[in-house]
Image (cartoon, rainbow, N blue to C red):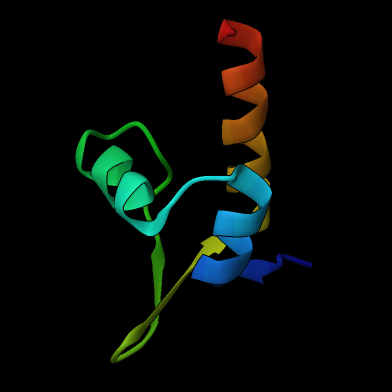
Length: 59
């Protein structure tokens, strides 16, 4: 089962602000969101976990 995180959850688990998340997305350094509806997006929790792990490896 794939879990979708909405922005508040992504912010909580990453510790990043909304503007930082969207800035990283534009720089192709953060997973792109998936469209959930006309005005809603979310992120696959597994992709967020992989991104966090990749940051640990480079730190």
